[in-house]
Amino acid sequence: MTLGKAANTFLECSKLFDVSHVTAVVTGGGSGIGLMMTQASTKLVNCPQRRLTTPRLWSPMAPKSTSLTAESRLSKLLPTSTIPGLAKSSRNIAADISQKISVQQLAASIADSEPNGIQLLINNAGITRDNATRFDRAGEPDFSNPQSISTHFMKSEPKHWAEAFETNVTGGFFMSMAFLPLLAKGHNVVPGYTSSIINTCSNSALLKHTTHGHISYAASKAAFLHLSRMLSTAFAQTRVRVNMLAPGIFPTEMTAGNSGADQKSKLQEMAMPNVVGRPGQEADMAATILLLAGRGGCFYYNQILHPDGG
Image (cartoon, rainbow, N blue to C red; front, side, top):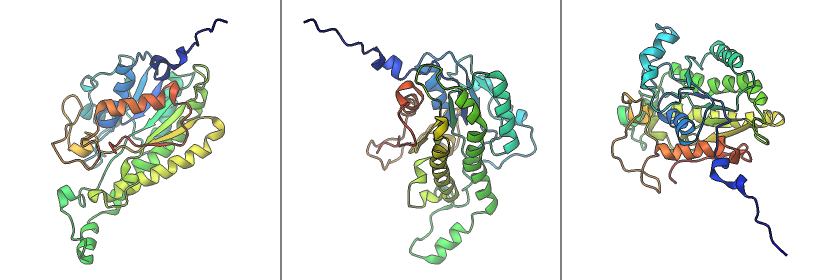
């Protein structure tokens, strides 16, 4: 009896992690973790489809601008020529995801250009407004002294909490709802494939300490993580998957304070509290995204992945 060789071509890396069939919308895709995600799909895998990135419209470290139009804010912050490694088929679209009307306009615009739907939404855009309480800038209170704790954290302003939640929670909610029909339409672009949402929630959402003074940021990310779990249940019958990322420290404008002409950030040498002993790198985030976005990730649903080095 002759035994035939099993056909295992479906287990090849080029099949499991291929995203060439995916059209994705990535918020905050112009720098930091969002840029790592976008580059992963345009450089590490043959990817002819379009990446529709919606960059931040203001620096996470600066007050929200109200005096500039969306287009002028975008051109000042993120000229297309400074975005490295993006495919020519990528488009950068100005949108303020903290505003419902802007999200609706964005979804309508992409619906017109993508009549067959999209396969991936990455809600990655995030801001912090904790400059008055973050320990590296404002110092650390004496945690044995009630008055010291109170005085330090009372420096936080209600408007900064509102701004953090508008972008980090409300923005992700309206983006998910607005793009749900497009995602559902994008199912089965290859047999068995289902569209998905990936929400960047940060490991700050799961830490019980004061996250080095980033108190409203951590609270907003915890809210976004729980919202994501609710969305995964709400969308279950549509077969649109929702998964979450809880990254540790990566070089971003939020952690490094700035970025270079290539929109990438560098961290100064520091002692890292994780097992690996270093911050995250581009390849770490790229591998995570390719797992969830490719065909091999279709069995992941309502999961939290922790690219944090242990």
